[in-house]
Image (cartoon, rainbow, N blue to C red; front, side):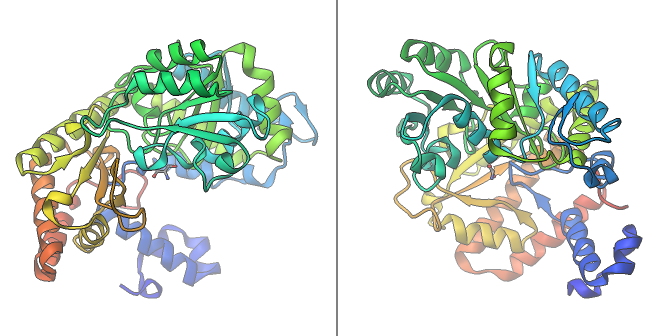
Length: 427
Ligand code: DSN
C-alpha cells in the first residue's frame, strides 16, 4: 500500500494533523508490524507503556550529569526518573551499579573502551562473521581502528566456542579488555569460562548481553553477574524496552564507567528513553516476564527441531536461546535471496554470515531468525511446526522464483496473526 494512502494515522492524531505524510508512514509501519511474522532476533514489540514513556515531554529537558549532580537546573522530576531506572536495573539484574544513559549499544561499548583502555591497546572479542559484534574490535569499527583487535571464533566442526583457543589467544596477546557475547550466537554463553581466561590474562571481562538481556532478566539464561567485570546491554531486544542501553558493574568500576559515559563520550542523556527503560524494567520484574523469557526459549527450541526435521542445517545444530542461525548452503539458496523472498512472504528475517562463510557479508550463506517478537504476540510451541513449514516453503519458492507461493504464504501468515495482536500496536 502507498504510505500516503494509509488510513490508520488516527492513532497519532496530532501527528496526522501536523504532518500527514509522516503520519501515513508510521501507520504503514504499524500495519507492516501487525501483519508480518517478525523473526529478526534483535527486534521485538515494546509495550504501549514503553512507547508512551518514550514520547513524553521528558525529552525537552537537558540533564548532563547524574541524579543530584547535574549541570542544569530544573531536575526535580528527571532525577527521580533516572534514579527509578537505575534502581530497577540494579534489582532486575542483581548488580551494584547501573548506568542507564548510553544512547545505544555501540556507544555503551565505546564507553567501556574509554574506561579501561588507551588508543592502540590490544582488545579482544569474537569476530563479526563468527557471530560477534562490530564493536568487539572488528576492523571496520572504530574499536578495531583505534585499538588492536584480536578476534576469536567458533570451531568449524561444532559451531561452538573453543575455550582452549580463546585462552591461548588471550595469554599470547594480553588484551586489556575481553568481550564475550555477540549477535549470532545460538548457544548459552559460558561466562565462568570467559572469566577464568580474563583473570589468567589480566583482562577486564565485558559481557555484552544485548541479545539475551531479557532472557537473563527472566531467568532463562545464566547471569554474567558473578563473573563479568562489566555488563553491557541494549534495552530493546529481548528486554523489550526502548532503543537504549545500560552499563552495569560491581561498585569498584562504577566511577570509571560513569565518567566514561558522561562526560567522556556523551552529552545530555535522553530522558524520555531513561523513563521508558524504567518502565521496561518494571515489566521485566513481573512474573509474566519470566514466563515470557522461558517461552521465547521454548519456542526457539521447538522451531529449531522443526527446521532440523525439514533438513535445514543449523549452526551448532540448534539453539539454547532465542536465536537460530541457518546455513542455507545445502538448500542451494543464498541467504540474501532467501531473506528477500521470505520478506515478500510476510516473514521478516535477516541474511547473515555463517562461521567460515565462503560468501561475502553482503551476500552470505545464511539467515538469522529468532522468537522474541512472535512470543510477545502469544504464539507458542504449537505454532512452530507451521512457522518452519512456511520458512521451508518460502526458501524453496525463493530458489524457483515462485512468487505465487510467496503470496499464498503471506496471506496464511496474516490470517494466523490476526488472532495474535502485537503489543504496542493500535488495535
Ligand atoms: N544490530 C544488532 C543485531 O541485529 O543483532 C546488534 O547490534
